[in-house]
Length: 347
Image (cartoon, rainbow, N blue to C red; front, top):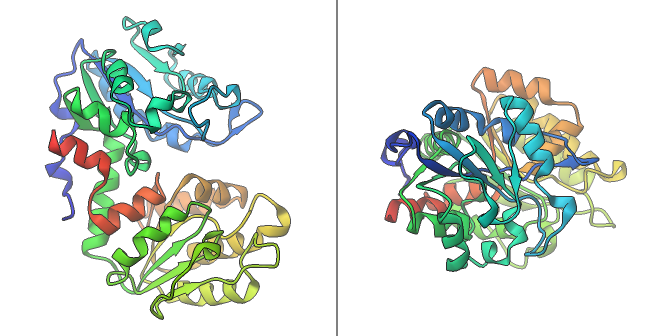
């Protein structure tokens, strides 16, 4: 089943005036020299934040950053995020490490990186309860994280009245429309290093016309797929797809009606291994297809190759959509739902 946007509870359905709202955001952004290098994901949360503040709600922001694996890692602190957002909102956003230290009287505050606590990824009920004690309502605006069974995604809706933020609802609206009425042929491009992307291939085989697999994923392909699934060859270092695979992918891209891309084709951060990702990105933007690009690493690659101006043009022309999630995007297309959606729907 594909959930329609109007069937999902919206933040607008909550009576938030003078109440405290726990807002789960996706602030897993790249940092450089202890500053936010790309604030796109933070910018996307502003409509929901401004809506809540405009209705005299108190907002406590919840997010994670990176993979500290349940341990405190100062290099993954949300302090740069709080500073960036403070500048945007022209409001001080205090950052609290312990739930019991949070000042509930602040108009807006932020809790430190959720993944500093092992209870977040373990979906520990006690940790969820400690978070829930901070607020009256829960709003999920972190689509990219909602394929995870984590305490702040599936635990909080069991404990508080819950709804979805505006960015989350937009993701569902656009992806539902694409799933139901795509321009054909449909080409899926899976890359990066998170092998859980491979799990959705079987569920999307009948829908997609071509599925292209690059990045590190070819190393983990252990079965034969139908002809429509094309697995790239990698260079001897295993850090980029070969020129032959790049050209094969580019030809398929040029004939596509809809393209969904999540994950770079190689270790694009290294100049000697950037060519596959760069050429695929350029081919996607040169195509006449409706384009959907998802995932933080994909966005970072586009930024590195100075393609933001083209992307902004296509987004304004409504021929391109930037999804905040790569894995979440494909899982939603495959299943029509996500654990984060089901948690609130079932409530």
